[in-house]
Image (cartoon, rainbow, N blue to C red; front, side):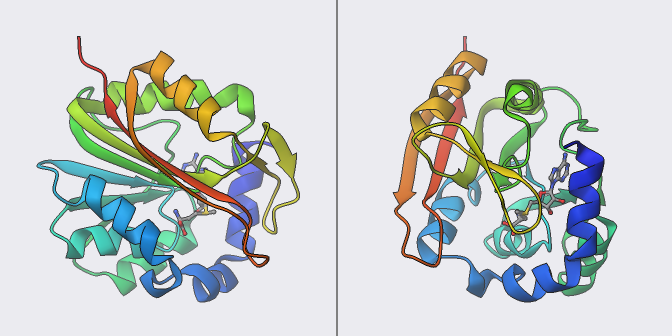
Length: 202
Ligand SMILES: C[S@@+](CC[C@H](N)C(=O)[O-])C[C@H]1O[C@@H](n2cnc3c(N)ncnc32)[C@H](O)[C@@H]1O
């Protein structure tokens, strides 16, 4: 599975995905609060990487963040621009960020690293780290699990990750965890985790 397969998989279900998941009302209130608490008050650009329909970017913008959404699926970017005309959205890949080093105040990657082959995760996180300004804040949302394992996600194969494993990788790459949130399965949703981290300075 490569990035082109993931892009095509989302493009083929974009309309359905937007209907099911594309508004802030469809995001758990605890998650909106977590994201807002770590990213809304930052001075400087906040990137929502793999923004999908752009609803969380719009939420951050409504909270006063200088937010830009980036996704590799043109259908999502077109929808996001129409739904949130005041917000910036760009077609692009989070694996090849077109930003200066140390220029970004915050990054959100909400369920957008889930399809990455595990061996590629550290490289992508290192790219995020390079983009981050001092005291930059990173927020990740992902499927929680006891071990790194692939599963049949409805769109395309995804991976679940232990929170401690993500946290340790972040530490090695130059981030320090500041908060985590976990929610067990409720039958309808898989176990969920989120981590907020700040760049480790010095
Ligand atoms: C599960 S969706 C999450 C979308 C959105 N963050 C949300 O919470 O609804 C995963 C998103 O990540 C995007 N994505 C995956 N890999 C990407 C990459 N390398 N660059 C940009 N976007 C990517 C997909 O196009 C898709 O929109």
